[in-house]
Length: 161
Image 1 (tube, rainbow, N blue to C red):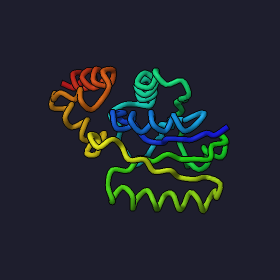
Image 2 (cartoon, rainbow, N blue to C red):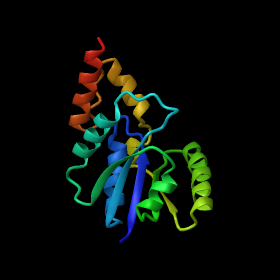
Image 3 (cartoon, rainbow, N blue to C red):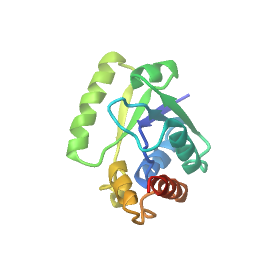
Image 4 (tube, rainbow, N blue to C red):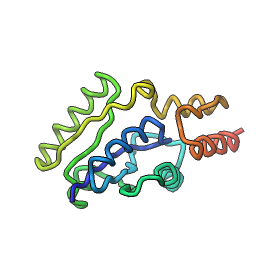
């Protein structure tokens, strides 16, 4: 079985992420959307909220699994028989960073390949930080995230007021 992993913090998941996931899901029998716990990041949403958000945003895809992982993705891949990592890149800066990680992952596991996807051009400028910032000012983010995520953002920022 060809299994791929698409890792990220997904805080929140955006339409750019979903675009990459939908296209990658057509190429693999199983795609694991891996919610990574990154100790260097302060998240708006906790792990349970991100799992719920991602699962509900991807419910229309039948070959997707959503998992949570704290550790090296190369280890998760090996433990789950995955042979491909999906990474989204929007710019040359993203590529340089992701290339370094891909080369290190290959050094640790030479059977693990990294496949780079670019999102649809209408999502090239999107990232989760921008979405959180807009939502914190009660701006409309409906063009950038699914409806369920928009509601979760509204609820989160209305609690903090």
